[in-house]
Image 1 (cartoon, rainbow, N blue to C red):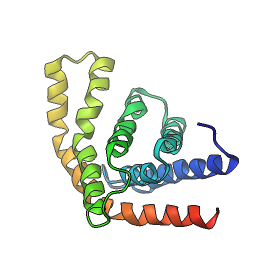
Image 2: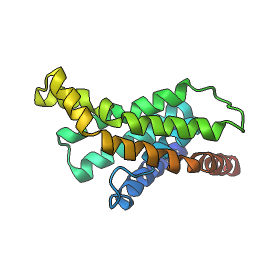
Image 3: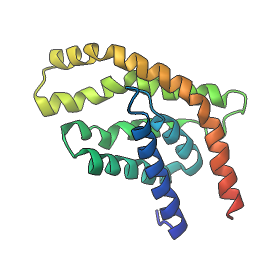
Length: 170
């Protein structure tokens, strides 16, 4: 996938916007707009959405440290991207918001479960230990899923804004 200079600039800004939104929301644990942005940019940019996603992942590592907690970031956001890529490109306008919100919520509810295999490998957890780790995190995953669902109301307006910006620069 060859990128134009314009795309490099746009994807860099989107990745930085995702990182900035994470920083702004750090006062509220497990409440952020990362899933919202990933769904919106994947709907608009499809495969190329991986560029801003991994810009965000790298910025997170650069500024917060490339520690063990960061390793699942290499795949956890790609899972959300992959789910969105499996959705039809043109969802009916009536149901698109609900589907995007549900996918965003699902990723939040499953975040700890998706994170757990890396934790198990990195820290030598048995399956029983990994399951205990997942269960201990369920209240946080519940909060994550509910907040992702509520924040998901912004997905369609962000998609519209990105598409409008794309049309105005053509």
